[in-house]
Amino acid sequence: MSRERADTISGTRWQTGFARWCARAGALLATVPMSGCTLELLDPKGSVGEQEKHLILIALGVMLLVVVPVIVLTLVFFWRYRESNTAATYSPKWSHSTKIEVVVWTIPVIIVVALAVMIWETTHKLDPYRPIEPVASDKPPVRVEVVALNWKWLFIYPDYHVATVNRLVLPVDTPVEFKLTAESLMNAFFIPQLGSMVYAMSGMQTKLHLIANQTGTYAGMSSAYSGAGFSDMHFKAHVTSREDFEKWVHEAQGAPDTLDAPTYVKLEQPGTGVPVPIYANVTPGLFDAIVGKYMGPMDGSVAANGTRSALDDIIAAANCRVETQQLAGVRSPAIAPNSLTE
Image (tube, rainbow, N blue to C red):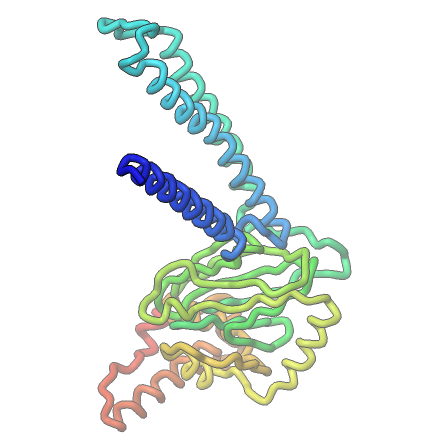
């Protein structure tokens, strides 16, 4: 066999092998999107999430009206005005075109104005503080008080006097009114498939209104970094039928653990990998007392007739814990009631 023929056969085999490798690599890459996680923002399960998905897709489409033509025209210009194309117009002294200036400035201005109007309207329509109208008169809103701890989530149901950690149970097709705060570090409360993200900050109270239109279990998380245990600060949002929700509430009300001030002081200590406890007989005004630790008592946190409030109980329990630590040889500053309530 001649050397030239051998080189030809070798080159043909190499090209065939390379083509097969490319085909296999392409097939493998094609399966990546199918094997990955779903994009939860684009798979909403509530009306707020649906509206936010609609807004994202419209904004993306409007911006692509500029991006796609720019990419296409860039490739066309490269090909049209390449050095070997002698048929293209050569104008080395060209510097201005009124038509091009009109197009370059008019289209972006129109797009910016359209986006501004749309965002202005949706910002007010999707305001997290704006209540959601009940689907039916027999489905009043469910109130949930959320406390971001280090590094876990505490959910208090004030109307049912129960609470859970890292587990949120909601009835389907029922508006949910969240009140949020944090024990110390700032966090961001987010259930992607249900909608808006809202920050939780110590000494402050924020609000959020959501609704779930489908039963299921959805991922919840903190989307703001808050220290070493941040990666474990997630929870499950279980959306059930109204009957199952009422059954769960009834079972939770029979739980043996009580969430009072001493229990809360132990619970708020930093830690991860906490089991999912259920508390019954939650101390009234506990959420307001948590906020009032740093900002002074809020409405409802101080009991009438001079009786002790939840805020007083939390301060006393915290001081008791600190004194116990000091007796055990752990040096830690005590919490001064005046410094917390001034």
